[in-house]
Image (cartoon, rainbow, N blue to C red):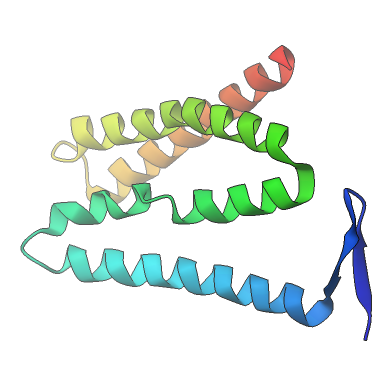
Length: 131
């Protein structure tokens, strides 16, 4: 059975099967989040669908991968960058809030997404310059 050795954890061997199982679990978490969003969006408490993406499902996955691959200090930096990444998300939400009733839904969401992308690119650029 082939093993994959990790540079920062020489005593830990992972089989290809265990890596694939780990990826499957992560995919199931993502699918579960989408299902929960869909269920809430069809209910009387549809606004909770906006809270579900903020549950740290994907952050947990990312943090587990980062700490396993890079260690605690990298996890700390990832968490700090995660705090700064709230800025593009806030810009997205602000755009949706301001223009949801003025533009068609597709235009509003497209512009909001574009603003998120531009803000995220700026954030990554500034972050890399400061590191």
